[in-house]
Image 1 (cartoon, one colour):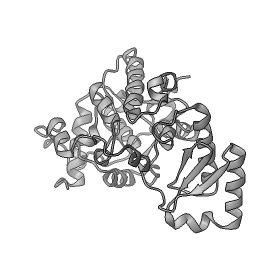
Image 2 (cartoon, helix red, strand yellow; image 1 turned 30 degrees about the vertical axis):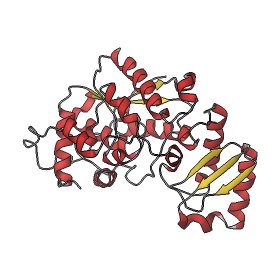
Image 3 (spheres, helix red, strand yellow; image 1 turned 60 degrees about the horizontal axis):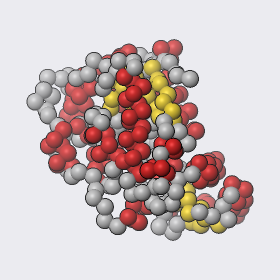
Image 4 (cartoon, helix red, strand yellow; image 1 turned 90 degrees about the vertical axis):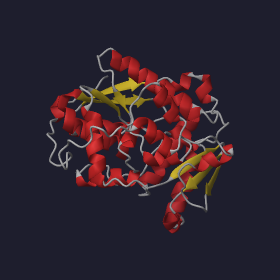
Length: 315
């Protein structure tokens, strides 16, 4: 466990961002990237930009939410249509899927930003990501994509707390992941499957559920919910709605995972993979605090200047 306080971590994050004249944040609209973008906008003003990758892998509602939040922060926001689904290496859905995906996404983002003269790009990986199978981190490192939240040793809990203190609307937003993460390794990724997953999860969202996944197993949809929500789902009205809507979407069978929602559950199917770099090794390579002491006690304190008219969304 880190000996740094949240204020210490804020100082380090402040310094990492201040090192750059201009910085683009790979922005999904989730809790982690929203905090990173908000802090970058606070420090760099108009020299912080957001860039969002758009493809069938991202739920439409998440993309729309990302653009709405970026506008509220007053930052320029660019859309990059990425090409994951055109790569056989990705759609084959091997255990390296996330590595391949991140290589494609970050490469497309970097090409777009290079035309605008922005050379520094950061993503919002945090310390908790180092504890699971995250091959996408390797892709980010290979392409020199920055990880300021990891440099600052910020955990998901830290990010939520700091987001709450800053009044960000995402502070208690459930964790999200791309739709491909609902498909078991080895099962080809198709736009039809992604569309079914998105539609099925929209049904659960419309019924008021949070913190869930619909895993795609061919003709079977496996619902993962928090155990506390099991009884709500099994009420006659909701159960019948779910069965009816899921069958309309194209699922012949609808099941409930009795374990409940577990982040990264499909990683169990790949045995004992080489996991992400150990926390200590990562920090030893990436963290340099020699210049982290000459900072105000609380660099994140204060309100944001919010001017939605300053935002620009690419067509």
